[in-house]
Length: 518
Image (cartoon, rainbow, N blue to C red; front, side, top):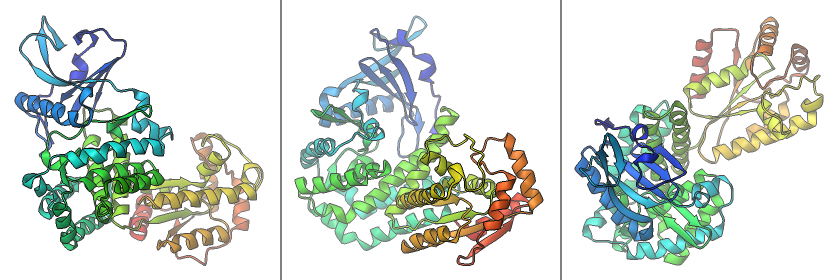
């Protein structure tokens, strides 16, 4: 990414810059834009950036792409896009709109209702099939009438698609080992290349049947808004690069289907694609759906990568972008038919399993599932709320322990169903719980990697005393450790790596990495 003489508009523009009064005034940033939000109007300013596939480095280019944005988006919601306005400098101040020499340009839009944003409805768990019906009923005629010609058809060819996928893989190479593992990266690359190589007839048929159109290019929940259940606005299509907007309608539809999967709404995702196929007659869409879902998930992961290194954003925003990228890459891996891995850190309280599990996850993307946290979630307690109980009493009774392990297993199975590698942290003192996890995972072709943590009694005692003053979800005291030790069922039914955790941490982590191979 290159950035050129960028003006930070979030530090310059104020309410006084507007041609009207407003109560609400906020400026948010994406990796390519500043978005100014007022009571009724939204302005969008393009950043002076060059990502290779996007070039906004001159005022002329930014004006041109502002105009393109308005024209293209009016196809789906014409009354939303008001036009392109200048930003001028006058009497020592910057103004949005007005007479004078334009220093910058912005797209001017009507503000949509926050409560109708699809992303918000997903987060609130209030999106329904009726919302999906509105989307489908809008998209079917849109794609039917969208422009297509020989030049647009090129974007549906193997060569054009491979150019896009190769670009994604090249641009994310520096993030391999940080936001996605080398194993997953290589699997997704191999799947993508092989699918393109082995399915030329399918892609050629899609072109022949007229399914390559000048579409939307960015069809997901962030760009969809509902006015109750009367109307849907599908906005913010890609204007900056034709090859990202033009292509198989299946690619656009796969983006939204993938997004619904990302929000853990597989039933709505399935309903969306099935409804579209039924109303459009495009039955061949399903043959390329997972391929395009993989592609779209990977693109979202790539954007998360770019956002995570944008120094104009806060540390919290960049860390959120990292986590988002990991989830999208895992989803791409899932669509590519990848098999996730599960590492289980087991051992008695105070033997260092939690410490090592978290240290391992600092270097390797994965989901952390802890018995201490799961137990307290089940009981409506906060993770760090302490309950010092006697062995197998209170919240540590056998009944609650059983519920805890079943809930952990449920969490593990859900996470791996979305392509995520998982690290489990629990004592697994009883053989039956180990056998349960082992059998359920093996049914799915996953062979969990067990790491048994042990330590001398005096080391455990010192650790337990020390952590009384630390923030931790564990409640076990030394007497509980001794009771656990007396009742511990030695693991003989699973293959494991046994570690004396009193040894140096770096050596332990190296052994874990070599054993688990995430």
